[in-house]
Image (cartoon, rainbow, N blue to C red; front, side):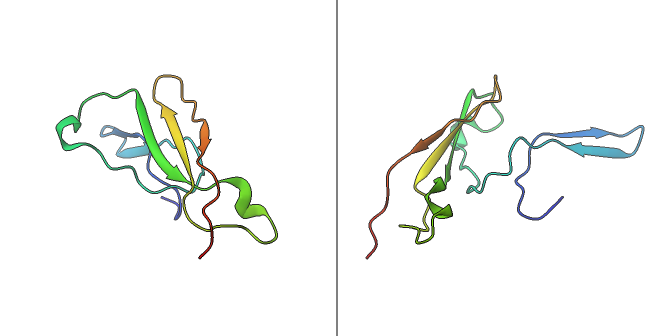
Length: 89
């Protein structure tokens, strides 16, 4: 699996001795934490911390996760919710 990409669903085909990893995005995120009471249960939404596009600026205001991606597992959409700029210290 390429470095820097997060895992998606894996399809294993024992008869062909192969597997396929399906990703949905190249966004930089932290891996989401799963509530232990919901492990292995279907879920509609997954929330992941990520970065805003402000890091593309010449002097970015912050280099911390300051936005959330909300992955809809039914539609595949993942809108970004900007939480605002983190003030520098």
